[in-house]
Image 1: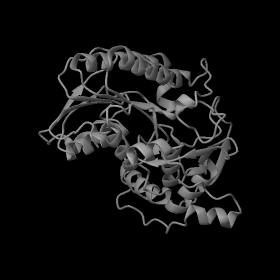
Image 2: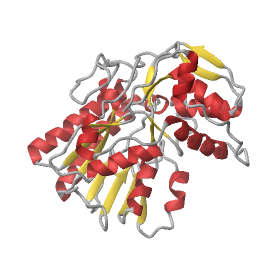
Image 3: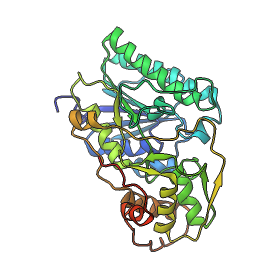
Amino acid sequence: MDGFDMSGKRVLVTGGAGFLGSHLCERLLASGAEVLCVDNYFTGRRSNIAHLLDDPSFEVLRHDVTFPLYVEVDAIFNLACPASPVHYQHDPVQTTKVSVIGAINMLGLAKRLRCPILQASTSEVYGDPHIHPQVEEYWGNVNPIGIRACYDEGKRCAETLFFDYHRQHKLRIKVMRIFNTYGPRMHPDDGRVVSNFVVQALKGEPITVFGDGEQTRSFCYVDDLIEGTIRLMGSPPSLIGPINIGNPDEFTIRELADAVIRLTGSRSRIVHRPLPHDDPRQRRPDISKAWEALGWRPTVRLEEGLKRTIAYFDRELGRGEPRRMAEPIPISAARRKAGSRPSPQA
C-alpha cells in the first residue's frame, strides 16, 4: 500500500492499556514503531501492557483525553473510550465527553502536527438496525435519549468531527467501525457477552442470557481486528472510511452460550433474564469495502478464538494449570444437528 508506513515512526495510541489498545501497541512495536501509550486506566489495565514496559521503544503516559495533550508524534490511533455497557453507563456524561471532547483534542493535536489520525468508531452507530447486514452507507436507527446514547451518539458525533476536520482542514483521517471483538485481555467484569459467558462457565455459575437468546451478533477475534486496523492506517490517504471491521459470520446468543459450555466442559446451565433497553436484535457487518480496499477479511473462526479466550480467562481466574478443553464441535455442525440455519459466509 502507498499509505502510512509505521516503521521508525512515533505513534500515539490513546486507550493504549485497554483490551484493543494493548494489542495494537504490541503490533506497532513489532512493526518497528515507537509507541506512546496514553491511558487514564478507567477501563484499561497496567497488566495488559506490563510485558511491554521493558521495550525501549514503548512509553506510557497516564492522561485523560478530555484534557489537551501536547506531544510530538507522527500518527495517532484514537481508541480512548469505555466500550462496554457496564463501563460506559457508569458515568454517561463522562462517556460522552471522552468521545466528543477527546476527539476534539486528538483532532486538534493531529491538525497541529499535520499527521494522520485513525478513529476507532463502533457498530453501535447503526443502533438497532433496520438494514441487515449493515453497510457503511446506512445512517442507523439510534435512540438519542436512551441509556446507550452516551456511547452511540458520542461515537456518531466523533465521526462528524473527524469528517468536518477532513473537509475544513484537509486533515488525513481514517474512520473504522468496530463490530463485536473478543479475545485475551478482555476485562473479566466488563459485561460483554463473550467475557460474561466464559467467566460464568469457568466458575460453574449459571450462564446469563438476556431475552430469548435469538438476537444475533458477529464476533471478531482481536488479532483479526488489529490486522484490519493496521491495514486501514496504512492505506492510501484517499481512503478515509468509514470502513466496517468485523466478522460477518452471525450467531445467536444462545448458540454462543452453547459453544462456551461445550468448549469449557462446564456444567453451567443457561438462565434467561429480561432484555436490556435498546439492545440491538441483530448485528452483522458487510465487509465488502474492507475486502475490496484493504484485502482484509477475518481468518480466525469462532471455535478457535473461543479456545484461546477460554485459556486466557482460565489463567486470569487463578485456576493454576489450564483445564483440558473439550474437542470443539464446529458450530455449523451443531446447527445442523439442532436443525437451525447455517451461518452466513464471508
